[in-house]
Image 1 (spheres, helix red, strand yellow):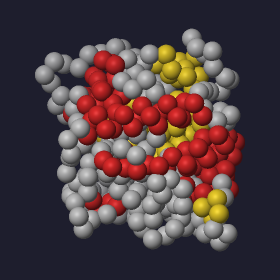
Image 2 (tube, helix red, strand yellow; image 1 turned 135 degrees about the vertical axis):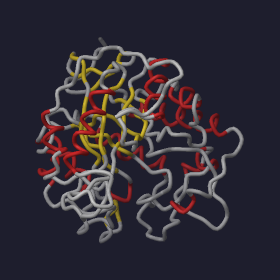
Image 3 (cartoon, one colour; image 1 turned 90 degrees about the vertical axis):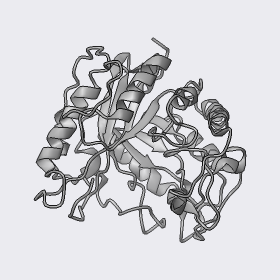
Image 4 (cartoon, helix red, strand yellow; image 1 turned 45 degrees about the vertical axis):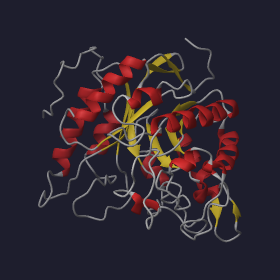
Length: 364
């Protein structure tokens, strides 16, 4: 066991530990948790009472949220203001919940609006951008991580830093920007090498700023530029990446990409986190694949399956919202039956089951 500070999550090989005991987690995504419209421009809807979020989870769960610099930019004073992010930390600490602190976004959504193309990974991350015209991201990514990480490096509420949401080193066709680049983003040569070098450089900087917290990659892991198939293993073999990431929206118990990343995590001896996961549901089931109660059962089946593998460390459904908008979607409100299931979930003893050779089919 490594020597680690009390309350800090640590890693040995493919296993996580907390206070000397094996540690696995469930929780939710609440990307909008730091939105506070009286202070910042916000990203998503504002959560009026954060205790509704964190109090609905068991202790030592994880909540993944956006801690982009725009969330710390006071639109009134035109200066940095960590109040909205501090508010998230205080609420999580009150309930003994840990945070996956995501520091930026591939498409620039709620984060300067700049699509992170290959040139960004080759050094553009040390420049500031204002592609969305909101002027709420005056710092470069490099400057931002040097602001936020020292502020919270002594906080046991940090479960892990996540360098970027869904990084990929693709380019963007002329005439498109931000999230509009998706579908118009060719993959240039040396994309994997570019992304790996970025993880090594930025990961080393984060570890220098904060050697005691873990780092997650934040990768989508379903075939993106630079992270495709075995490239995922090369990226995650970086000595500065502690926890691998996959985002899985397949409603079946087993998914191709989920199984692939489970196998890859075992090969490189690192833990894997399902950083985003979910499927659509609504109350009536009309025009939707399932009702909320059926979705709860499907998510429970997926939890039991993936946690049968000892290298799977966590599973975070997308997304918690204080007041649902209705209709068909991935929203999880406080009244959703998924929440009490997560709060009472008991992790199975890993069986070390092996994936069948040549078989990655989807089975309910």
